Length: 579
Image (cartoon, rainbow, N blue to C red):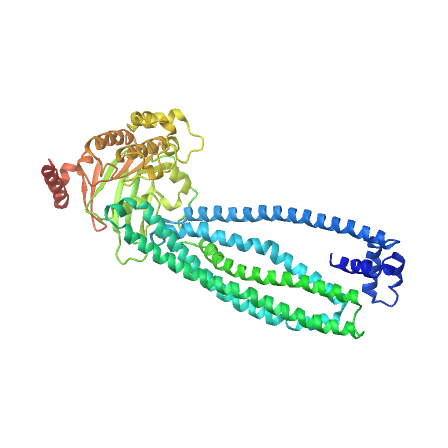
């Protein structure tokens, strides 16, 4: 395209030179490389008359523009596919990584920060990748091509151009450092902003009940203002780079035009045609230089986001959860806790200390005690959410660490006090995790869980969407859906974490009936606050500050265990007062 400037000027202003014969005659005495290049291109452009040459020039110009735009279209489509595929892959890998991290990680990490990692940080990385994949490759190639052509036209003049290049590069590097620093701060504030937004929405009932709308708004506004402040700092530095780089480029261009033009006028430099070629090429060179500087700065911003993204992807737990290769189908004999101790990261005290217990196949074993006694921690250890700090847990003599994780996940099911449901249909929630669900089994699980009646009364029955966290259902209905989910899974080992608390009398009765059906023929570990629900358990373990202080059946403990009797009488008195 640049080369066409010469033939156009020759055709219009030197008609007698716009023929093949005239052009081939010019090669004598020219530089070897320049002569060979012109000898190759001349027959493609020049014809026997200036009119024919002009016509040929116009046709070639149309072809060049068409081919250029065709390749640009292909480049854009290919780049977009590559860019979105890379971004999509990062998001999938990050979500899988988050799900795979141990529970201890989530104790010290805000959910909003993780959401910001997956959405905002990856988006900024995407913008950076966009310029890296295309422009950061294309611009240097264009710069190299234009620079090479300048060297061919006038190598002495071009060397002068090269002297000031390190000044521009040095300034680009300095600006890049500032942009990376402000980019990191900006992403951190975005993570805080997302966290506050999420907490405000999820806790909207509490916010309204406590009249804390202004409090939450002020907190959000403070972080939003800090985000804006860092964003504007980065924007100001970024916008300062463009005029500076352009100013340097214009000064260079003006100096060279003056110097080269003066040589042409006094007859010591190139021909006027070559001078115009040089000027046009120089002006074209300025654009990729300016573009490259701008893209370099955007890459620096992307590097700040990339640091956070790869920091999450490379994250390894301090104590990785082991995964054995022994698959387990059922409990033949017993589950045994032997001198188990556990301490949460960052705490001084043990949540569980020297705990021993045997749960025989088919038994219902209950854990009771005041809050903070270690009940939920023991259940989490059995579920393999954590591994013991000391001691061991075994199933039929096989250490839990040596059992295949997926096999163990299929083996157990958990019904918690805080019901976790998903913004999906009732069917999807009952058959959660099963891509080939059986409607017959789902209906049967709902019947056993005392959920079938209210499900069939909803507008879309089993295809009813239950809202975020099941907000379209009552507390008792949510709990029965959770029990139906556990029944559908048909687990060998069941963990019940106070599944009937915070329910009204009717809902508690229906849920308790569903639980009674659920536990039949299964090994069950129950965390209980209401002792009336575990009177008939095969074994009751009383805990205090992570230690077992009593073990036995209900009537034995009433006689021999003062702490159990205290708990029972306290609840009995509360019930009497309530009645």
